[in-house]
Length: 264
Image (cartoon, rainbow, N blue to C red):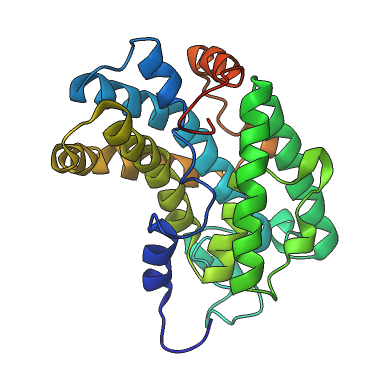
């Protein structure tokens, strides 16, 4: 995009529910939880959202931050070719390792993204959730290609029906000029906002009270994003693997329903 748009403004665009990220048709597992009677009101919705943030939110944000790192090794979000005005070893207050330098090449970038895809697949036990993640990844990738055609979308893995959505978020954040931390924040934020919006429709909740709930969750979102950003420095095999087995079970059952309001 051109003009005077700043990275901070772009982050607001990415976090906007109208951005075509493939999430509008998904409840994040809430529809099945409501059907099972586990989410009934605002209080139980809050518990659901906090649990989702601590599991899918943390994992998704960490993998998005790691994918961003594969494209932009500098944690400040500065492209590798952009001068910092100081020795590379002083960037961000820590030495920059050889793997950091190599990460910017196309071959290593593709290899890292492929490893991330495999590791995220391993952390997604339910077949239905793997399918949903890749479906949403394809939708987000379509939006990213349209807005930032020069980004290295071809480095994303294509096996399994397309890349997982968090990996695409990493490249979208990098293309938008967002930092690694900002990208993780967007993913953590959308982990709860999508399900919260679904809660209004599924339970007939007061949308104003749901918004108050989301404000109360802001601190938890920030903490999750910060943890995910720190984890992005680890190898793909050591990224967070928080799981929610009941969500996996609900996802498989939900996929068998003939009539449903949301795709997941």
